[in-house]
Length: 209
Image (cartoon, rainbow, N blue to C red; front, top):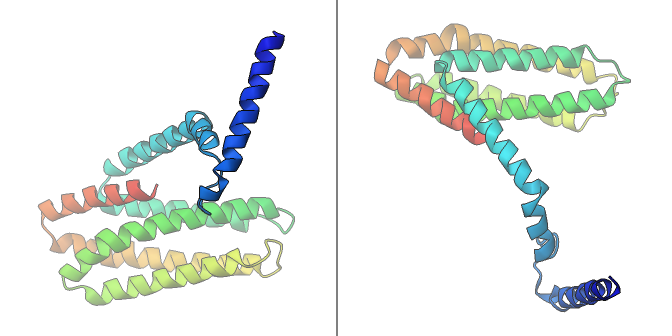
């Protein structure tokens, strides 16, 4: 036992020396030694990657089973439900507010990416350029609201009022899409393009999941 312990200590000393000797070759963007990175990859990091891929496939499977209009309407409802949870908090629930804001920001970012890369180009091709530009401008307003909330203390007295104003803007945006713009687009495209939009929306959502 003593011999093996001594060998391990010697090996550790040699490894440390090698690590110090190679430190000058390390990039400023490296977060640790190659051995540490390899160990992380072999352990928790690989599990995290696997879990993330599983989540992506589940997300893709769910969205691909729905028509593109139904998928986007469902995402609108989910976002509004998150807003309602935020509005139900009080100033003492700062951690909960921060977590809900992060969830909302991710959902809206993924949603906007899908629309801007799939649906809005289809609007332009169908000569609904004005609608596409209006909706993209409103996406810019969403980003401004997110910026304001991210730089505001969660217990700020103005926090709830800002969230309430933000929710009203998102709901108006969703109503315009669901009640006017999307049905009109659906009526102007053929079945082949309709199916393609559903598939492309699923792919875009998968990429951002």
